[in-house]
Image 1 (cartoon, one colour):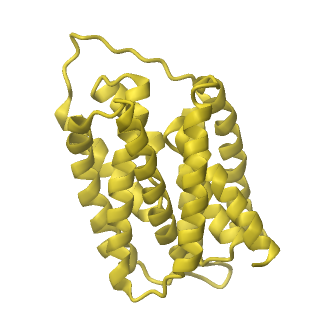
Image 2 (cartoon, rainbow, N blue to C red; image 1 turned 180 degrees about the vertical axis):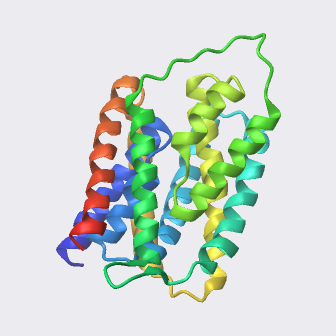
Image 3 (cartoon, rainbow, N blue to C red; image 1 turned 30 degrees about the horizontal axis):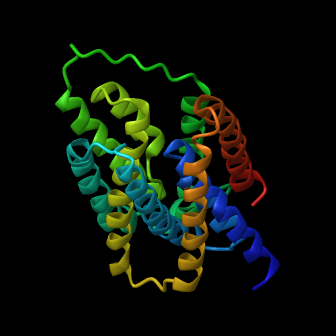
Length: 266
């Protein structure tokens, strides 16, 4: 095992810690680590990320369920449209995009670069949501907006499938405001939704005849699972809002870095 893989697997622990602490952010870290440190091709990295984050989130979700911090009714209600969207995206939409998206004498846009650029913009959107204080405005008289849940679920599944993200940064606010879920329960519920849609998305990739480096993703996943247990423990010690804000600034810097690297320093 070379030094870059050791660094990558060490950072995988941080991926798990992030999921355990705030219920999101795993894919935001795993894709750049896989691409820039582990040397995985971007499109394949999004598939690997779905397996890694999905499996890690499942372990975290089971742990939250033992603490009675998962609303399984809302896992089904919110998770079903996301599952459909992420599977269709990985099975049909992503494979249908040509390898050369745009070409001119001055500029050529490849599929792999497009995915990383879109991923970077998703990171920036996520960072703004994390930096901005999240205020819970939940009242018992509010009615659940089922239409909004369906639309939001399809949108999250589309984003998750395209860039290989779990979508936790979108799922948690949706659970808070559309289904009136308390924050701690939203984190646990989000982990199960992330696990389901990510693993379904990965299954959608298996028919693409890609060579999967199982040793790499299973080792990376094992390190991330260790991290999620650490993160769950630390979540009892660290104020979630402060951690969310700090992580948000980190994600913002990473998103800007990816855009600059892909467009100007390739």
